[in-house]
Image (cartoon, rainbow, N blue to C red; front, side, top):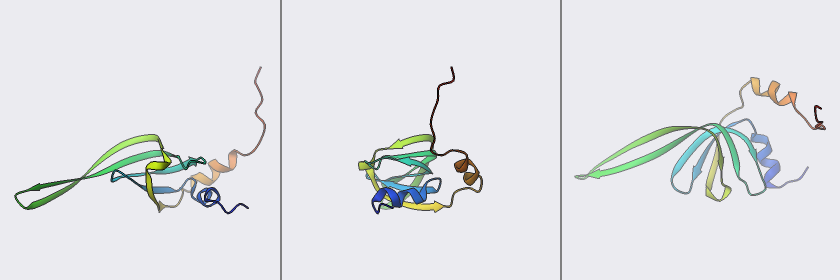
Length: 107
């Protein structure tokens, strides 16, 4: 088994991840795939932005949430990744259906 970054990331396929980006946004979603550039594919993704306002020496902080759905994150924008939760119980059944094989045309 290769000991590169790819083999370590394979453990977290179908897990719920929290990803911090260089522009201080946080994305939470289910990890589906990655490539050699560490671009990430997430499904059911949500974006969280922290907005700071400083009025009259009172620091106000609020978090905006936005639903994104299926997204691709460019690898160079990712600062950190953390596991939010394990894969759902139904994910094992879904992952077992596929597998290596040969695609054939229908007609």
